[in-house]
Length: 433
Image 1: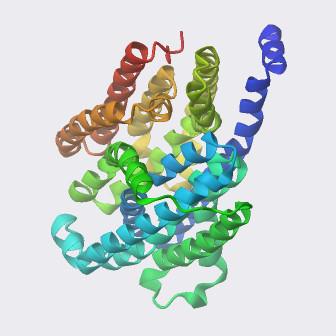
Image 2: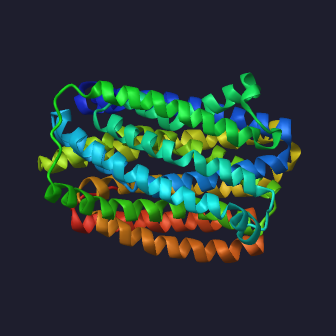
């Protein structure tokens, strides 16, 4: 242990990864606590059924945001990290937010118009209509926030990146719910309306911070450069679309086949299980720009070194977190209500699945930061089909337990196949050994 600590303390890259990822991790933990507090408040104040509708609304929100941002956040992270001058990144930033904002507005207009049909005919939940309408109104604003966060990640402002992505939304929403009830027109829409106002406020703050980063004159790229930029974004966009469907398809299918209460239970256990990935996300938020930088400089030894450090650190820290969940899961679930004990099996399956995928390292960052977006998209598409099929049948047979089994298995397949591809195409070992 002492030798390991000395090795880390003497290595500049290791120190930077751990120090900067600590900012991410702090906000990720705070974000989890505030999200848990938000869930607790809604459940105790409005009941399990209302929380189920809120959980389904936020699932739809997350999917629409990913479609709306079109992969520009990831591409801008690469652009801002690859050039010393922010002026180059900003020349693409304005193009990105223009296209993404127009596209997301068109998308939400369509869904807003058909909200009643979607709630009634697809989800078989007419009460979901107003939740859905307020949800989609928030989407264009959060799309720009996500793109702004991609810029912050690219310029290595990881504390601000983590604040916006993981902490700000639920924190501001909860503050509005507790302190500004007079803003709410109808009690039925109180939660998602507060969410809308929160996102709008965060949008304004994020834009102010981004524009303060611009210190040089920005020259807009020509039409040919814009076309190239957008064409390069398409593989990132498609892989992101596949990923979000893979990530959220279990909750969407639960929304179709299960009750609001079971949707809420599953949402809570996924929130708890995802704590295991906090260190994975924290470390890789710093490693991703380093992967891009070392790959483009052809420093493959440094690339392999940072990946090896990432996978080992995230796996062992994930194991410690899993041990904590094993010890404290009953008090955490019981605090919300006895009905949430029915989610224990699903929680354990999801936790074990996340431990298993951490063995394979930051495969998505490696592929996307080294120009292998198309291969990643193909892997994602195949995994998505598998996930949809498994969830469709297992949810109808086993409810939320089936969703946990299907999703965990699909993600494990994706990480394993990605690892094999990386090893063959890049000659890089992302596995823990």
